[in-house]
Length: 469
Image (cartoon, rainbow, N blue to C red; front, side, top):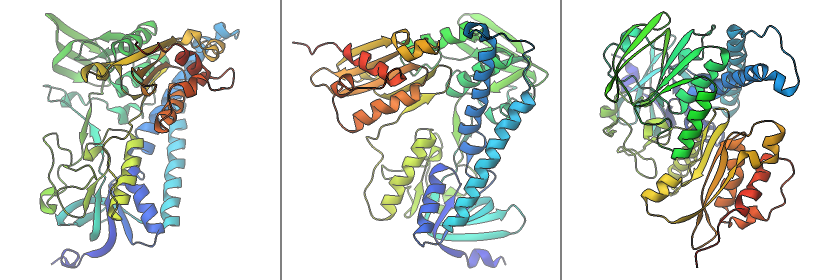
């Protein structure tokens, strides 16, 4: 008999998965003197520092540097013998990842939280058995247990898709050569970011999406701006694409068959990157034995306090159905941490900032026009082209625009959208204004350093229409 099952090791907190929210609550709780263990299958620190957010932005920045070489004459600099060394691009990314992992391990050591590498699954209420990476098993039971298992790239049930062994973002970020012709299936955040990056490295790129426009959940002017960006960089965009069959082998030859409207679709490339959404990592971990229910889409069924259907078991991040952003998982940590301590913090009503790291960036906080119209919320619209922002002029990055939605009866900012250089940083300025409950006039009348990108906010908010009579 395995005595670890009948005599589990007792902990104050057991965390399954070492991603953003889970590691933060582990370190914080351990520093308070609690006995804490974190179970991680593969990536110390979760996907963000290893295979997702930070590595992708590292690669994307290398691609931006490459784009400057192609434009060098514009800046009065001649170029000769420009060559992309993807092995060096990859090594720069790997060096950063190694450094981030070392930082995480140091946090575990200093906090006192125990990190156990292995595959965990529930064997009973608040009890997890771990098949250790080095062999053997251990079983843990916690006063509280947090499920923080994240998500993975979705592979749709398209005939032949799995057989071609497509790239996901994980494999794409590990390439040490430039694909000859990359087919990208999905024009959301991941698809757009990596399509542009690999085009700048020199690949021929075809970007496909089943919807009528890229980034289809955003306003039409954002979709239009992103499609123009793709067109100007010679990325072939195919919308309304319904792929019904895939054959070949990614890395050699891939063929996509289907329809586009009433016409047949037949595209060939050398590589296929799948970027069509995320699937929560909740299957095969014994949730039924823990009394934890899931939704139809496979996410943990949690309430507004992020407690699952089992007493003392909580969900954090992607697997709990939270918006799929590291910054939201980090906020989930605050919610769960307070509620374990008998607080009453909820996820409802919190702001969710969006940022896509294309070049230029797209960022949004609060309501979009699409959302405001769907909910019947009246607004005043202010809009400013990036060509009118002095900082954008100085760096020759004038593509895009800023726009803001202002309440019709008050001067409250309902939402802000920017498609332009440094959009994520500029958005944070508006977000803080919204969090403080300040009117848009606070930014309109502010003295902002010249010439900086946030200075454009002054011009934007000067363009707000007057309140209706």
